[in-house]
Image 1 (cartoon, rainbow, N blue to C red):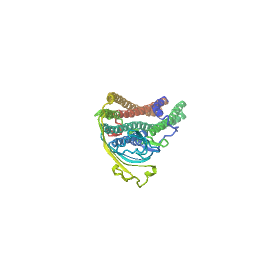
Image 2 (cartoon, rainbow, N blue to C red):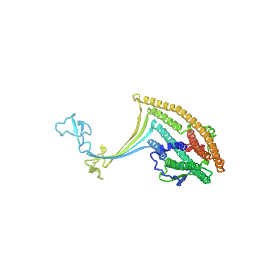
Image 3 (cartoon, rainbow, N blue to C red):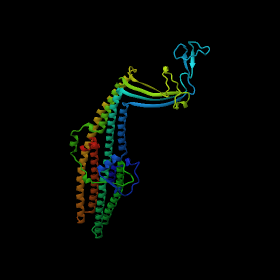
Image 4 (cartoon, one colour):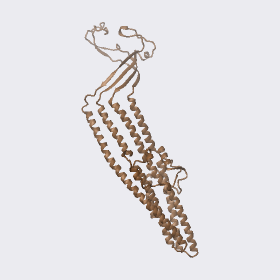
Amino acid sequence: MNLQQSYNMRYIYLLVTLIFAAPAFGQTQNSGGQSFSLEQAIEYALANNANAKNATLDEQIANARVKETRGIGLPQIDASVGITHNQKLPRFFSQYNPDQQGFIDLSSIPGIQAGDVVALQNFFQLKSAGNASLTISQILFNGSYLVGLQAANAYRELSVKTNAQTKENIVEQVTKAYYNVLINKDRVTLFDVNIARVDSLLKTTKALNENGFAEAIDVDRIQVTANNLKAQRDNFYNLQELGFQLLKFQMNYPMDQNIDVQGDIASLQIDENLLASYSEKWDYSQRADYSILETNRKLQALNLKNKYAESLPSLVAFANLGYSTQSPNIGGLFKTESNIQEIPEFGIGPDKWYSFSSFGVTLNVPLFSGLQRSYRVQQEKLNLQKIENGFSSLKSAIDLQIKQSAISYLNAVNSLKSQQANKELAQNVARVTKIKYEQGVGSNLEVTEAESALREAQINYYAALYDALVAKVDLDKAYGKLNPQNAQDK
């Protein structure tokens, strides 16, 4: 039982992952539903996993942001229509000059003399006014805008690489969960084989006991072995169900539906010469995290460039076109006929709405900002230096990860080879011991010990196989081979 508990410790990470989602497990395997190969499981996960979906949406958002930035450089056109009614008009103050052309004649008012300040109302505007205008502007030159176009493309590149990193993590999680289920399926079959073999031995021992060739304690000893083995199998069914639940969770497969996996462990190949091919022509940029840091450096360099561009002049062209009118009341604004008297010398005609237009260019030249721009540039330079320092740290971390994963993989491969040899030896010992026992030249205790050693060897073999497959996945991740875009390099 201790050996089985030791093997069950390898499932602790499953319990931690599913502690918030695991249902009550029954005594049956969660198989017989839709069946997936490893490639199909990964494809399904990439299409349905929530993180993968969000990463794809972030990439689409980045594409939209690039187009938004480009739109800043296109003509900006705004239209406005407004109606205003002044319940009480403001007064206009002026110094009375009867000799000024166009000044209202106030000579008939007693006490008004030239040079007096007068407050006039309702002379220069009516209470209700209408305005309809069209404003157009176009950037002719803006350094920050040109840098912004480059930064938008770099931002899109960053979203693509982040999406790839998210998919890499999903591939890792699904692959490990898939291998766990696939290996445990074979273990379930092996439990049935072991139980059948022990049951056969139990029947033989009972027959020998009935004929006086075996003691009752021999029957009891094998019966205990059979009972323990069946209890272990039932416990293992629960662990296998947990493995199915984890696989469905990683794939975002419906948790209430059954799922199954294709293939068998015979198809799982462990190549001990893999390291040589991985090391050949390898570069740090194959790692998703390193590639993301490169894009962040590009963005920071563009941010620094933008701070310099803010000191450059900007030139914008504009045009303003529209119509306006006034009336003593709001209702008058909507009359089709005009009650405006024609006065040619003042440019007033009989039209209801009068047009106006203006156009020009605006040149903005930053002269002095109190050294703010200089300090902003200094800050961005320091931030860029921090990113450069990050490359050295990341390279060291990648080198360490590659070294650790390579050693773990080699150790796992060696352990697998050793455990496979032990399993084959234990199988042969159990077979020979049983034959000797049936022929009366061996003891029941030897058979029981051989069966126990065989089960221990089987447990160790499957544990070593799973460790080797997980080490292979970790090695692939260390070398940047899990990214679906790099699948052809594997």
